[in-house]
Image 1 (cartoon, rainbow, N blue to C red):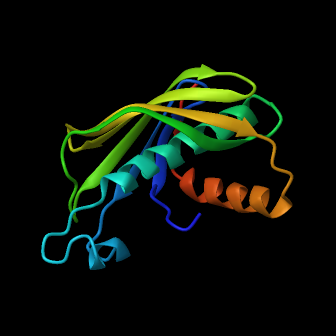
Image 2: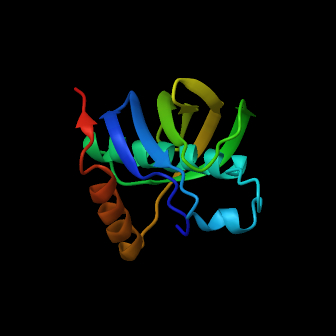
Length: 155
């Protein structure tokens, strides 16, 4: 993963929901080009942030349930809408809610809020695939350890 668009997972209830945050900084490289003088955080990166949290939530849920590890691969973006722009200094709060979890795929609803105002929302479908690459598993395990360091785990 080149861009990490989740700073931390704040809360997780395995099999139900997760929340995470992304703090937008003027130091983010994206603002060199998007847009000089009027920095706007790209909607595509907000979508990617929700997808990163959702995919991680699905993988963590499977692991917590004792299911074989399968990696989440974004397959369908459905009814995704951007409601307001995000700027440096904003803190995005991502929310993921599980709609369906099957052996081969999963569906989640996602939202991004700034303060209490809706920024973006939609539905994402993930393919769940076997990846027999030890380095990927190790890298994901380390990433999840960092993201989950202060997470509230709900029963």
